[in-house]
Amino acid sequence: MLAGLIAKKFGAEVGGLFLAFPAIFPAGATMIEKHETNKKARHGLQGTKRGRLLAGADALGAAIGSVGLVCFATLTWKLLPSHSTWVTLSIATMGWFGIAISGWLLQKRL
Figure 1 (tube, rainbow, N blue to C red):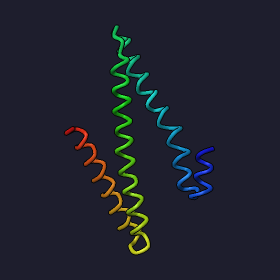
Figure 2 (cartoon, rainbow, N blue to C red; figure 1 turned 30 degrees about the vertical axis):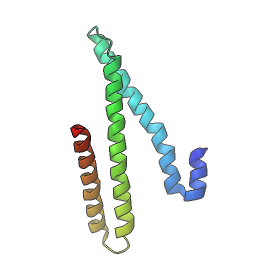
Figure 3 (cartoon, one colour; figure 1 turned 120 degrees about the horizontal axis):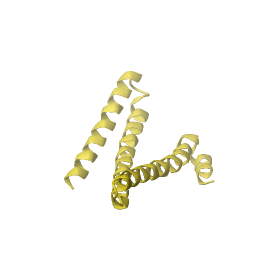
């Protein structure tokens, strides 16, 4: 319902973001946690803490990637009217990659 209200106010493109992410991310995090717990259980260990840590690392990666995608979308939106498609997408991809790598390096440092 929230995604529908957002789409009505801001358009289908924005509403779609709120529709897909809440459905996909929790399923992925749950699968990671369960897989790691099961893997450790096969070796006689509990694995709950490790599973949660890996699910948390996945969440951090999703957040960093989301910031990179916002950069990609913004660059594409701003550059596409005045530049060719391949130049725009190349620059936007480099922006996404730069933000994603910088975020990853920053979290490794902290």
